[in-house]
Length: 325
Image 1 (tube, rainbow, N blue to C red):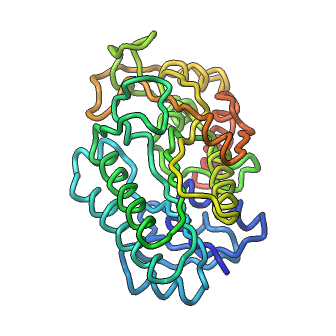
Image 2 (cartoon, helix red, strand yellow; image 1 turned 60 degrees about the vertical axis):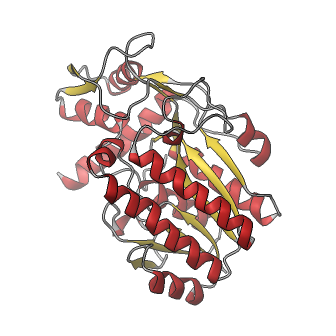
């Protein structure tokens, strides 16, 4: 029996694959390498290059590798890009997930863990956000994920597919041992770290939000704690746990300027910051209510410290700089 990890050559997926192999699990990866990398996949783990929307390919993988569980990471994840290309996001995140869920059901897969997002909440009515709060996405990215949540819920109920949906807040950091991390410079902490390493200017989108310093507030979760939440979710399902949707965050937030100050302090580099207008689809505050995942899955974060998250991200970016310079 094995676990299929879609998007397993990407940032979060590669950490997941490594954690599963460290735990002795049999794993197979499906990734189209649009944002993933062959080198990120743990040595010895089969990598199938292709799309999750390719039903024939997914069906063959499930049969050949005797797949009992799927952890589904493969998706497009940029809020601004989704605003620019909504149809592309609905195809990659929703249509392809439909195909994957269909193949899972037909192939007799027992458990399914879905990588969703806090973007489904939109501009929350209250903070911290609970799983039962209204879901009113502000972007096609959030909507595409919410649609997949709904499909998984309805299909799971009808076809007895057990699942856990995990709504991520802001994932950051890297493997503490420096074995894998994020290659793309897209999220705030990596952008700030890159500015520190290259001693370049950094752009901040919006300084007029209804927050103490005028910049957006987010709940940052270390990638290794997020991966552990998936391992807890898999154990929960294997022991007969009922389908559930859970937040993945620490329950406290930091503003953009607080993150930048932390990067400057940890790196020892003071880089300039430029302010510009807001980006479409960015809510002011997004912080998780995380008591449910802690209680139900027994999840116990190990890296709940912004300076630690920044330090691991910084170490990884420095390593990449050495390798690719």
